[in-house]
Figure 1 (spheres, rainbow, N blue to C red):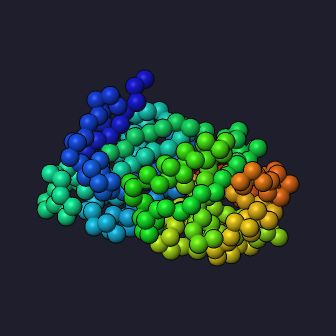
Figure 2: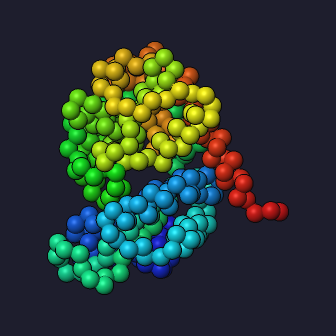
Length: 289
């Protein structure tokens, strides 16, 4: 079956989907995006992604191209039309298409696109062994709290990680870990989870938000503060979170083992809690028989 995608009100086979070469997302990276996990054929963490997308659009002064309810319906339609059971839906909004100019164009309708991608989330076999991380310099702009399309720095960091046999890169700024190229970074020391506090220096991760809620509910201590690379290397555990990994234990940083070099008990527990939460959420939205 050909994958069906969404472009400005139309559901199309992917090979027929087109946008203008003058679209500001293409020319300037002038837009935002979201990635939503799909579990058992339904969107997970649905409310939180809508809140973050709204904030990103407001920060860039891009008008919503539709209502939040209509966007949900679009994404649910894509999941259904592609028979997606597990994976992600990617949604993107740009300022629209117009002749190239730096200032905001007047009365230009926003461009909205979306597509699905199948991938294992609940039973990802890589989770059992843990991930390797390398560190690299932080070269991104200073509004990382906006989920913008400007991802070239992250592309370079991800490629650096791949070139060094790692699955993720942690970026270092002023001696401190900011976050992963496409994930939130955490360490665990003496049973306490440590992650950087929210600011314009990091993305307000949806998985981060949910994990801290789950940790609080389970009596797992956490602290929001910056941490150094040396602290990370001396940690008992480390992990990352994102829409595509949910929670992935980190067992090596810059080729040095973390703890005993295996996924630790706090990481495993938090992943179990998150998976259970997502399953419960999507099952609760199942239509009555």
